[in-house]
Image (cartoon, rainbow, N blue to C red):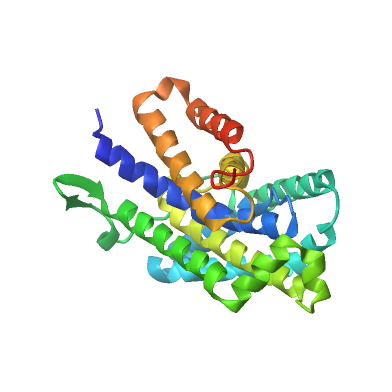
Amino acid sequence: MTGLPVVVFDGLAYGMLLFLMSVGLAVTLGLMGLVNLAHGAFAAGGGYVAALAMSRAGVPFLLALPLAALAAAVGGVVLERLLFRRLYGRSPLDQVLFTVGLVYVWIAAATAAFGAGQQPADLPGFLQGQVDLGGVRVGLYRLVLIGLGVAVALALALGLERTRIGALVRASVEDAEMAGGVSIRVGRLFALTFTLGAGLAGLGGALAVPVLGLDPTFPLKYLAYFLIVVCMGGAGTVTGSFLAAAAVGLVDVAGKYYLPEIGAFAVYGLAVAALVWRPNGVLRA
């Protein structure tokens, strides 16, 4: 049976991938009130950019990561200007129907362009293998994922709390109409936030390829997990999303190691319990 420390490390690494891919959805939902169920398409898009850059153009893994984030961010700002901005202020049903439709458009387009199979993405040699941490052998890549997730969470939290742009974003989250009344360019903040969220999703998707695999159905396959992280963490909060993603990763991996017969039920049970306990997010009473 796999030791508990290894399960914890694997669960935290998985949680950090979920955090990177879903934190943009949490922030945009809190800022814009936009129920964007197509957010996972940006993660999948980043994953495809990284996988194809490595397999077809020989781009090194560490260079493919920023390329994936940049491509997803560019795609985010273009689609926000062309499509998503038309959904602001619309009913949640309109937003859900439209963005679910976009998911299926993505699946069809990606299947036609790249095929229905998994995309190969091998880790470079220096990220393979294991390291010894106090007598516990853990995967080096998973350790890198944990460190990167913590670093991004700290950077986002400090950015929202300590910078002028962060203050403007928080003001817009609290009352977008009032923020616009005092000359804050809410529309520009929306575009900036959406682009940042898309870029982080693309980075998370690229990092996830060697661990989770990648095929055209990726946005649909992990949609429930993204929504659970956002609902448990609370819309508009980075810290809440981080804690929720870590909890989901730990419970999901532990359930698969120790109770494989119950499948994903453990995660859904965790989500129900958390929402009953804290319906507005784990950090909000």
